[in-house]
Length: 146
Image (cartoon, rainbow, N blue to C red):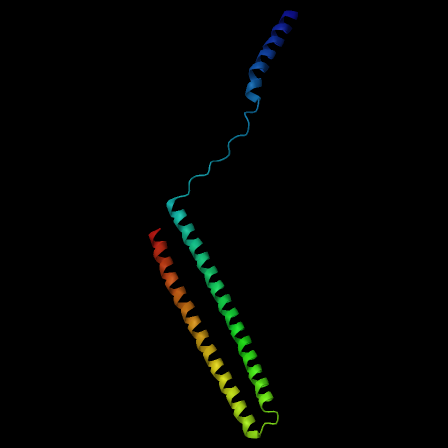
């Protein structure tokens, strides 16, 4: 009986010795490998990236145009104010004719300024629209090439 227990114990010990290296960790198991993206996927990513870049350029151009218009308006108002102050210094007691002439001049300058601003805005919008149209045509061709 002792002999059986010894053989059984030795057999169990041998089985554990053989199983121990199999249960020991081999480090991290390799995760799923990333497959290289297809050429079509890479091409479509490039198209999407160029779309995003174009949009950012359009937004930046619009901001720059708005900032320029704001600076022009500020400069025009300062010019009008300086002209008004100079007129009042030059004519401490202006006649009605002088006042009418000065106001007509100021009004004409303001009208010209606003007309010029409207033309610049229309030109900017036309330029933006043309750029968008050209870009969309280019994007269609690029997508077709993918």
